[in-house]
Picture 1 (cartoon, rainbow, N blue to C red):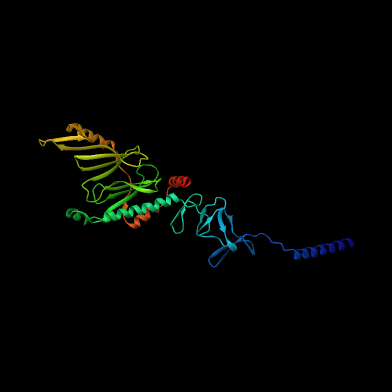
Picture 2 (cartoon, rainbow, N blue to C red; picture 1 turned 120 degrees about the vertical axis):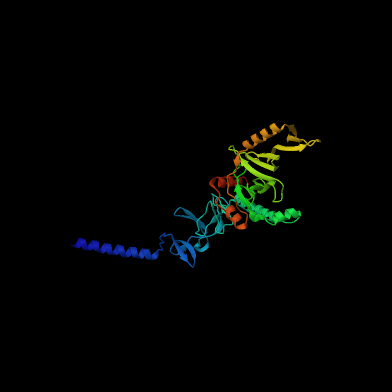
Length: 324
């Protein structure tokens, strides 16, 4: 009985001693948690100690916590490891391969701005707006041309963002949808080195020429410009080329006696050779390009230009960002 009583007294003394020690020393237990207050999120390391000015990873996502524990949202923050600014969405998460909340910039795989793609977007919109202005212009034309233009404007045109020269970048093709065969009015190719679109072919509503684009299975594109059935010129654009090359010109003239003289380029040929060669050339050029043409107006331009790039486009634009 005495032994039991002695043990109980020792237990009581030990418990009292432990309580005294806890009261003498401040012990903080780590309990990381989020706090939502007045429309903002805060992150705390303990119940009264916020995380400050550092990156954290939470549920597999990266966040930046600023002064007094405030979570950064819809902001560009410098990544200390790379020295580059990365974008944090309105949910605070480091973003990749997406647009910013305002859709003014696109973010790449590493969270930084995909500059080359954003330049492409800006230049595409600027080039198409210039085309609208040019097609709506009604000055410096004859009375007959004014009669045509009074019925036609940019609203009768359509555009497509289409990779004409198969270099991976979408180019611009503008057509007259009022015409039966979607007459090509302009072709602009993206020049990545210059960071702008370059017009490689241009007509207008009053031109006495018509143009169509055709594409071979190999990827080569043909531009066929004709004034009538007896005056046809063929131009080719190989993969990655920046300009159309003059290939062959079929036309005719008259001699002093009024007889028709047939020519292929500058060479005089017989009517049979002329017709056979023209048919062969037309068969070699393939079929029309497969694409969708959209209304040439501001809403359609913004909608098409600001679509999400494909994975291959992101990779391609990222390569040029790294080169810079």
